[in-house]
Every structure is written in structure tokens, then in C-alpha cells.
Length: 98
Ligand SMILES: [Zn+2]
Image (spheres, helix red, strand yellow):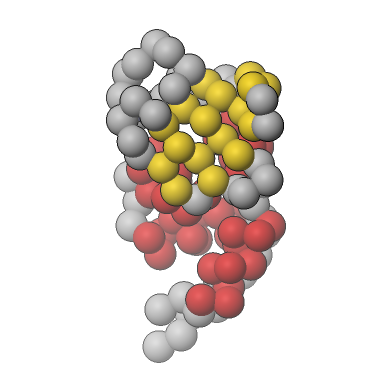
């Protein structure tokens, strides 16, 4: 088990716009960012990122969530592996509770 406090830290430290920007092109739109959804193959910029709230949402396929959810979806990882994936990008060591 990964402690919840560590998961919160990973979410706080992750820049969601930078993370998602490595997978898809994002353009500024209104208060946030938008781009083509990497999950539904649509060609409209239905995919939105809110850096303020650190969340993403697609208005075409209705997928959405935080940075961990994005990694789960795009890298096809389990929840703990997605946390480890993000922690590695941040150079954080994952504390494991047994
Ligand atoms: Zn979508």
C-alpha cells in the first residue's frame, strides 16, 4: 500500500499541464488548455485541462480525473503503478506500507 499522504504529495507536485503536454498538443483556451483527446480518436479539441484544479476532462468520451487517472488511462497502468510512474518523474521515493 502506498500511503495516502504520499499520493497527495505526488498530485500536488505534478504539473498536470506539463504531464499531459508530453502526450498531446495543448492550446490555451479560456481559463485552461484544450487539445485532441488521446483516448477516443476524435479530431475536435474536446479534451480540456484545468491547471488551476489539476484535473482533465474530455467532453467527447467523458473520461476525466486527476494526473494519476490520466497515467492509468494512457500508460495502461494500475493505480499504484501510476503513482510510482509520477513519483519517478518527480524524483520521489515511494514509501511502501505493508
Ligand atoms: Zn475523449
